[in-house]
Length: 180
Ligand code: HQG
Image (cartoon, rainbow, N blue to C red; front, top):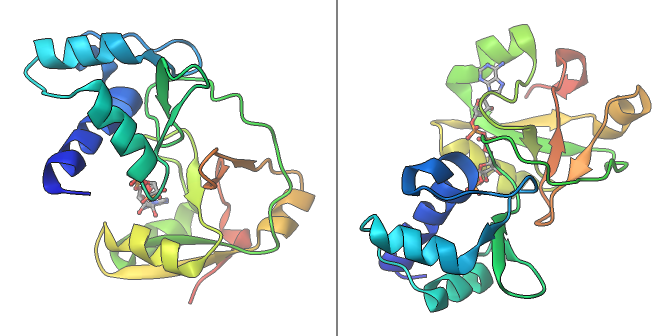
């Protein structure tokens, strides 16, 4: 994706996950926005974007950050929200092991409180260590934590999977984390 599209994609993340009100956009209770309205409001606020840009970003995003509904008229972010939306995720049994990438500077605090969801709806976990490493690198010197997900699930903790395959849970207590 070229630089212009990357910055347009970041703008979509901002308005569909965190600050729809920054352009006066309304998300429905399940996080959907009307694409035409999004385009109109974005341009009215100086963020140049077209319907075609959106279609290209949705299809090129390697992480499938966004989804268009079957009609193609509505769009939402698949995960990562800080605004309150109900993605209607169904609880699901996780694989035995999941990974969480973080930065070494967060380790003392994680040792104390486990993994916290912070501003997001959930703690984000990955199926593979490479993805976790890339997620951790965004915050500093990366470190990969191994999560005993299936045991945690058997103990009664809920897991969900977003439409783009990210594993989600509320909180990972220290007892289910294997530190390197
Ligand atoms: C850390 C991206 C101190 C946590 C990625 C992380 C992901 C703690 C940071 C998605 C802590 C939060 C989410 C504790 C957790 N003490 N630090 N007790 N518990 N942390 O960005 O998981 O590109 O909110 O380890 O690919 O990094 O946006 O979460 O380092 O899927 O589509 O607090 O964002 O996706 O950072 O990333 P974030 P994340 P997108």
